[in-house]
Length: 228
Image (tube, rainbow, N blue to C red; front, side):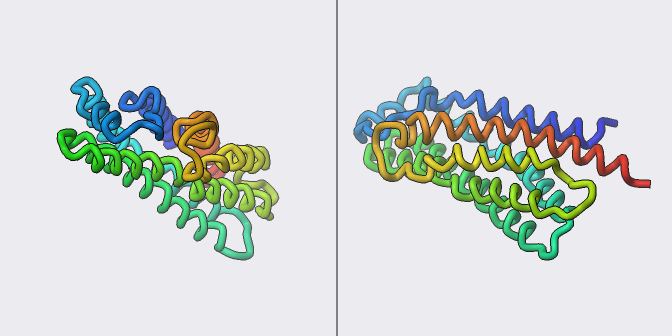
């Protein structure tokens, strides 16, 4: 039987594969497109099937990410703190991010479900999806900062997670900050298809998933080794 760390790395690899292979929107739609242009994109039979399949796939892999996030909460609970506030705050962030991710996916799926509808409605679903998908970063920033603080305040003689993990999470949090301002621009680096709000954000998230998957796998292996 495979160890939990091996299963965790397999799950992480599968999630990142789905994240990288985002076939429905490559490259992402521009916020400056008119309602007719957005509707035409969703009505294209080639795009239609890709969007529907990729959103269904993304929903399932979004669910698969939840165990990884809950494992982070459990690792924080193992740390030596005088208060449980870090684990409770982390749990709240863990609930918020995947929920908004699901909402964005559902809106993309709705836009592709009846592409013959009024172009204005299709554009509304598209806008709602992209803004939600991009502006969920405060939850992701908070969870990275909370995890970093929990590591810094861990009083155990043998810390649950190394301090470099805290430094790494703060770097990721900083990389995600620009995407929080996606509602301010229709073009440029802050737009939902821009360098900062799309590419930097999603690369940072992908790297975070890979690195934290490996870190959690090692933490689980170490915890099992300490048990009698």
